[in-house]
Image 1 (cartoon, helix red, strand yellow):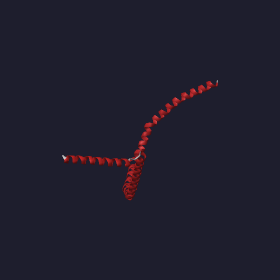
Image 2: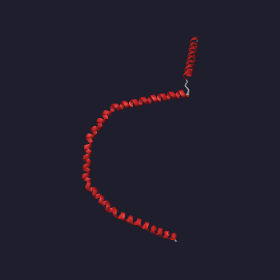
Image 3: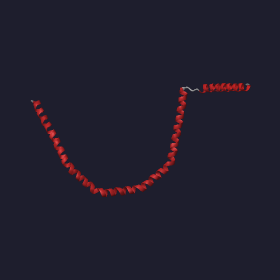
Image 4: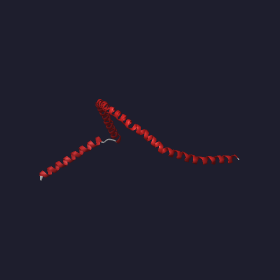
Length: 138
């Protein structure tokens, strides 16, 4: 029984001392809202600076390789692109002219019809306008 009381006593002692320690730490480490916000802002700023620094380092390391890859790509692809453009012009040049003539043949009568319709709608309005001017003059 003495042993049980001893264990219970130790438990109370441990609990009491830890609560005292927590109370002391809690009071001294309690921050005001402004202090907390300033710490958060300082951490954000520090992290942002580190991020920028790492980005600059990465760019410094990758820039030569990026330029090398760009030059290699231009060397391999540009001649092929030019070859494809010339080939397309050879194949589609006559076809383009044919398509243009075909479009003009199909749209020519339509454009004439649209022009006539527009003139028919505008002419009566002009006549009405002239009549109203003459009537206003009288």
